[in-house]
Image (cartoon, rainbow, N blue to C red):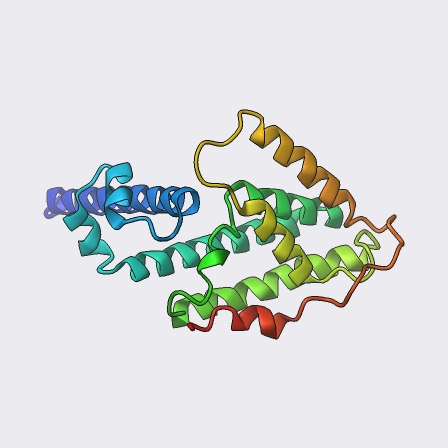
Length: 214
């Protein structure tokens, strides 16, 4: 068929570019969350196995790379929430959402709040995430599975805390300990816990304001 070889070449180049982009984003998340957000872009390029020039052609600034990482993390959280909504059991869906988000470090980028400009894509993705996560939490609450007083923002902050990793080498049993503590925290969200929660619910406006650049 006329043009088929050219179409195949274009598709091959597109697939290769997509693979390279994934490698860069995975490397960037690993570098920034383990070495700190002041780590140089050259460290990302080295971990991704590409040249610094190649990385800058895709992301012209470090800020652009961080902005893309934020969107990617939120998109993954949306997918996890949508998967949770497909679970027949509301509590299982909410629990799996939290476990999945912690596994891929959904909240690991929270420390850069206020250090980068927030793009329209970031706000749009955040709003889409809020809608689906609110639905997930409301479904668990409606089923009587969620502890009274727990808000979607409580869930987000819990994920954020468990997503953070210390710099440097982690203890050999870190994953084991993290899984145990997460199970304990998740049990604290269950409706059989009837003691009133201390303090007041976290303020969504204050949470969003963190992302306004200082």
